[in-house]
Image (cartoon, rainbow, N blue to C red):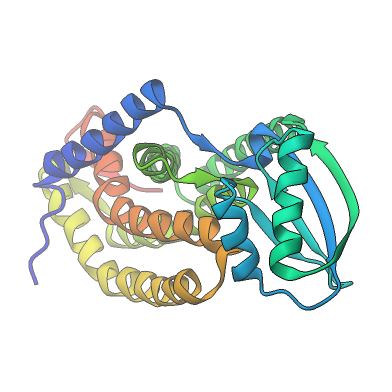
Length: 290
C-alpha cells in the first residue's frame, strides 16, 4: 500500500481549514447550544410513591416544553430533575402533570441553579488545558524535540476545535460532560501522535531534505495499521455506549466519537506534515531528529 501523506498535505490542510472556518463562523453567528449546567435552570428532587421509568419521565418533561432536561436517579430512589428555568406557575403546572401521569410524589428539594456553575467549570477546564499543554510541550521536547512538541500541540488543538465546531454547526446541546470529553480527547489523542513521531525518529539518522518526505510517508505507513486498529476498537466501544448507554452519557460519548475520528485523522495527516514543514524551513541541506 502506497501512502503519500506529505505529497498531498495541502489537501489535508484544506479539509481541516474548511471545517475549522465553518466552525468559527458558526461560533460567531450562532454560538454554542449551552445546556442547563452553563445557563442555569431549576433543580428539583422528587420522590415518587411508586417506581417510575426514566424514559417515561423524560417524555413527560419534553411534552411540557422542557426538552433537554437532565434526569438522575438517586441512591434513595428519588429523581433529580434539572430543567430550563421556570417560574413558579410553570413549575406548579409541570408538577401537576407529573402527578397525573405517575401518581403521588414528594418534592424533597427545589431550587434555582445559576450559571456560575458553568463559569467555574470553564475556568477549571481552561486551567487544566493550559497545564496539560505546558507539560506536554515539556515532555515531548525532552523526549523528542521542540518541533515535534509544537506540531503535536497544534494538532491537538485542531482535534478539540473540530469537536467544538461540529457541536456549534449542528447546535448540539452541551453540558458539563462536554468539558470532560474535551479534556479526555486531549489526553487520548496525543498518544497516537507520539507513536507516529517515535517512528519518524527511529527511521531518521541524518538525512537530506529531499529524502524527508519519503521517510515521513514510510513512518506513517508503518504506524497506519496500529493507529487504525486502536481507533476502530475504541470507536466500537463508543458507538455501543452511544446507542445503548443511556441519555446522560450521550453528549460525552458523541464528543468522544468525533474526537477519536479527528484525532486519528490529525495524527496521520496533520501532525506529521506540520513537523515536516518545520524541518523543511531549517537552514542546511540535511536534517536530523534528536
